[in-house]
Image 1 (spheres, helix red, strand yellow):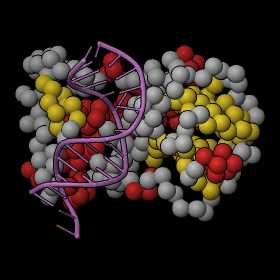
Image 2: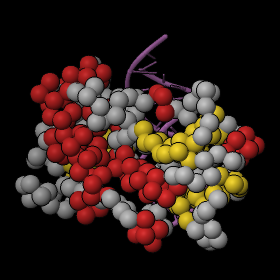
Image 3: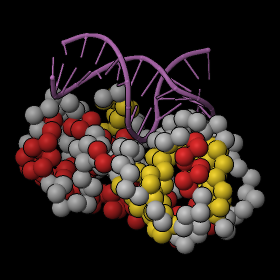
Length: 271
DNA sequence: GCGAATGTTCGCTT
DNA sequence: CAAGCGAACATTCG
């Protein structure tokens, strides 16, 4: 469901709601594949720990606990809802974490999402450590990008979505960033010029900041939308808009499959 | 009924 | 052998 801006929105909601609370009980429902390292250790490890804060790295979202970390990855359709005790779980709820006050529900229709409990001092096996720099990191520059993918035959869009290149960008925001940069998403990374890499690297944090701000949502609205209605739809310039006019030139936006993912771009504005 | 959907990983091919 | 590609995962929605 979420890319960096959405995960950040959810993090802020969880942070305000859960910081300071203590885990009392954990319930797994058909979550054998979702809770790591295993159901037993996941549940037992969490109970009794207090939430000290929250953290986002790429699309990973963590609750920092006393003596450990609870990390989620929502993949395509995962959803985290901090609710009052007694809230009727959504249909595909797989994990319920009850705190001294309120609960955190993790639901995911497609079951791609994952949760890890990592004890302090133990290696982080969630995969978060294999991520490239955050887009806001000063290490993320045009020079870095070119050095990292500039020899590749893959499409530039595919490279931007590679989490080991830069963390947090998915199918929506790669299209949006490349539209802003005026670069055709299907172009091979090796054919992209240094000036274009600079544009892409500069626009990436700008666009993600913009969409993160537009995504801000109150706890009440987040719950009212059942954790799903927090998207940037009104502000997207290309994603989901195939056939509609480009807001820059008026020409029709085109859909095309790039790297196995449905992509939308403007053939006139993006070279 | 068919195709596509905001993601990642695995296995096969080049 | 590294890189790149397609399939697989499971469900809903249009």
